[in-house]
Image (cartoon, rainbow, N blue to C red; front, side, top):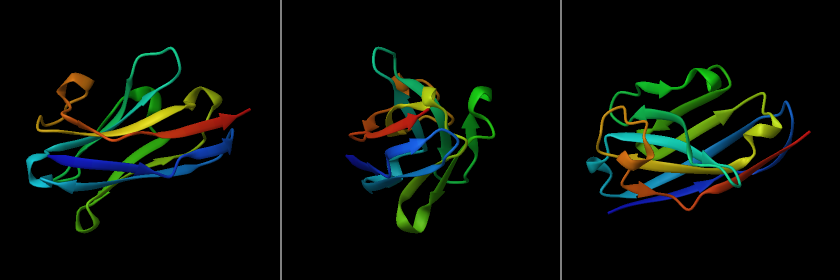
Length: 123
């Protein structure tokens, strides 16, 4: 089992920044890829960015390139998501997730999920 606990969400004005954290515990060696997803009300869960737990290789989509950056601190078993230049459309619940599949971008490839942290961006 892998346990994931997110924190760092909140209310921020458009153009502002937030850093989300996800503390990973349990059988962490079984997780190859860690990722951030988000889900806005009435929308499907959306891939944000993934990172290899071993070597830090990042997997991201072009629409978020340059604004969002995932990183990890293996010594602290913590995954981060730095979010800059936030927009109202970034408002969502943000989840971290763990997968055994290298470079996975589909939610179905992820076996473990955190409870989510709310990010609200006001205009």
